[in-house]
Length: 302
Ligand code: HEM
Image 1 (cartoon, rainbow, N blue to C red):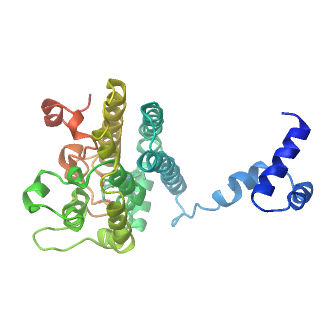
Image 2: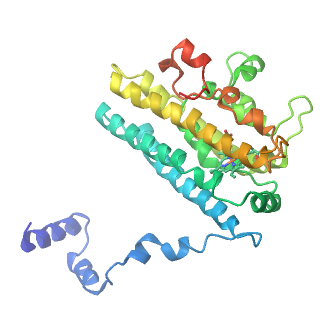
Image 3: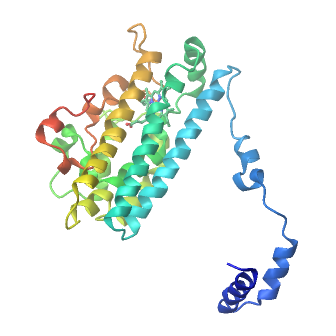
């Protein structure tokens, strides 16, 4: 595109907005050129690590959580587009490929946690973090709610408890992740769960109401012909997010909390050995794509 054409396009753009193009061109003349550090906000980003103890590895723990949250944000960014925009199947295939790549990065890098911190130091500094827990990661829940109908976030025990024709509020009462902090016999909740609910419950319930009927699963079920390739990509994501990541995460918890068979208490105080296992959670985003046998073996490594 030559210079005259670019200038005339700029003029047209602002004229159409009812603005005076010269004012904007003058602004361009005086604007400072952008640089890497302002564009990426790297200086701010690097001020966000605030360890609560003087153990050096705590910064690794914080930063790896932050890296994960950024990846979850990229994933939410992609999933939201699929939820809100009417893409054709090629775009779905492309975006599911991206989601699988991001999730694979999270799985492949989890050794940064498992082998990347001093065992004794981790087990000392983590006590200063109680009752905070990765359990309180809201983006993790946002992804679940965007991806699947709420009934798929209820495990077998929950299905026995929940009544007929549940409302969204009923689903939230029985959602699998409450099992991390709610004693269903006494009704007592852990502080970790109470904090989380106070901060996020209303937002998550509002979100579930808003996207009812347009989760990724709903959209997939309403597709006229979902191709085999797209099904493969959707299943891959389901397995990576709901089995493979939970297993590397659980193995890391075992490494630090169960090395000598002593089952240390987690900062979020859950019955973590049971709770974190994909077999217990039974979380699936696209259950209709799996065979009966595959569902029975859910949570086994493949
Ligand atoms: C040494 C590393 C880690 C250990 C030992 C660990 C341990 C645990 C434990 C025991 C729980 C159960 C809840 C509780 O009682 O606290 C949990 C939950 C959770 N953690 Fe971690 N975690 C680690 C690293 C991470 C990282 C890096 C992330 C990334 C954000 C993360 C995200 C989560 C999530 C999302 C849950 C809830 C899982 C679910 O509900 O299915 N964890 N973690």
